[in-house]
Amino acid sequence: MSDSWYPDAIRKEITKFARAISAATASCVGHVAVSEAASLFGYFSGAQVCSTWYIRRSTPDQLTAGGMADIEQYVPCDRVAPANYEGNSHRWSFESQGGVSDAQGEPWDAGQVRRAAHLLAWLNQAHQMPLQAMSSSQASQRGFGPHRLGIDPWRVADGERWSTSRGKVCPGDAKIAQVVEILALARVLAGQPLEVSNPVPQGNGGSVKNWAGRGDSGPLVLELQNLLRAAGWDLAADASFGPATETAVRQYQGSRGLVVDGLAGPSTLGALRTGAPSIVVQAADPVLTRGSTGDAVARLQRFLGITDDGSFGPATDAAVRAYQSGVGLTADGSVGPQTWAKINAGARPAAPDPAPFPVLTRGAHGEAVIALQTRLRESFPAYAGRLVADGSFGPATEAVVREFQARSGLVPDGSVGPLTRAALGL
Image (cartoon, rainbow, N blue to C red):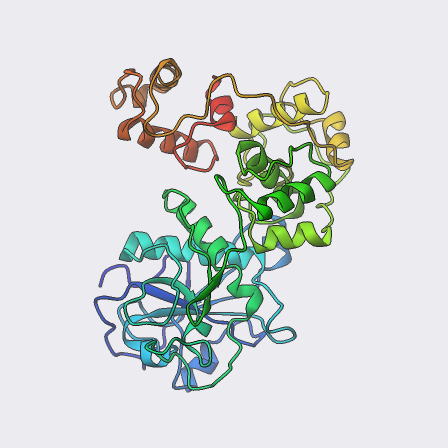
């Protein structure tokens, strides 16, 4: 099997686990170590069990910068890491630091969520593992799922036993509730549509929908909108999760140091329900303009709810101008004392005016698509040979849009909404 080592992992090979894994492997099981050890290399080296990876807790710097937690890999992907009992022959797994003081209620921290999502996206690209939630421990299940699916009494009657310990708490309710959130972020990283509509698996075939995303509607969305309104966002409470709600969610996530994915999962809803405080932005932050880099830019980006790469590029410029306009400042794209003062005060812009033309996605036709294609061809010569300004939003247009979004620090979802249009200057 190629790509046996996850490229971002700290490689600590345990050679005694040498049995070949099944070529049909296409699933990963999430565990919690119930340990605060920074590494499990020593323990696994002397034990008869072992997981493929170990995701550490995030350091304060990683959380502040919106980065990923560190990860160790002990066994290559083409060999069995025996952590899933009857599922050992064909399932990968990761252990995670934590679970000592509150096994049920402690969630994975934001850096662990990002690391898990990045790992799953890599497994999808390198090993064709589907980015979907497993609903049971049945041998046919593929994707990502929590260890509890294979533990009695939650295991379905014909499911594999993934542990001999009945009632074992692994990885705990709070972490299990993050499965869909992790998968949704993994799909974004893999450039796939956000179609993670399957609910969080609970075992015994049961499930619960505990997150909301673009296109959803109903009581959970209405609760989300009312919570955002209470937190200061000017947002209609219409129970419909549209572009304005997604923008508000992203801004809220950025202001609280959460994963900025536009999805209202357990972490985001939990923070809203408990009134989590905003990130404190340092009053002495420097003036930031296009071309600036560093931690201050990353903090600004998190507040605005966009990709926090620490580089003030077109997407950041567009988001800053939109924010300034929304809070009554001159929209010059320069983040100086007045803009920082608004941010420090938690000022939120009013709901944006309707877009001058609709959000464009694959299958769209007409003058707006021609304007998009023409702008891409004229502004970026590298795209000119790949696009025809024919007014039809097909696969070629979508591919170029995704590439442009990725280069601009936007979510590469292939959908041309307000932020993408702003980055393009449309």
